[in-house]
Length: 68
Image (tube, rainbow, N blue to C red; front, side, top):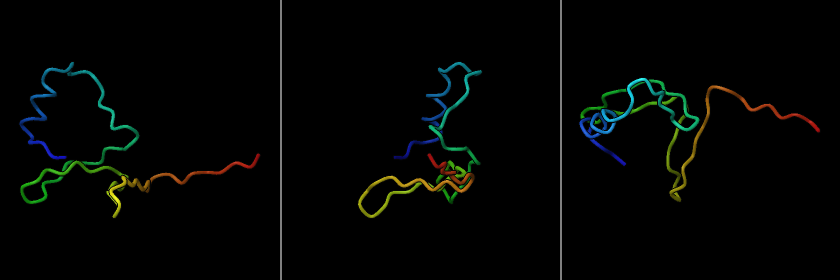
């Protein structure tokens, strides 16, 4: 899904400017102009696989498994 920067700003304008923004478990990294498209980048890689499922690869923390 894509929206314009203007549309995003309009939606954010009506919100309390002191609210924190949550990205649902993703860690915001930066905004990057990709030649006419502003990409929101996260520390995790997020993409659709060949079947259309969302895949998230977390490069920040390794999951520790504890034995029972």
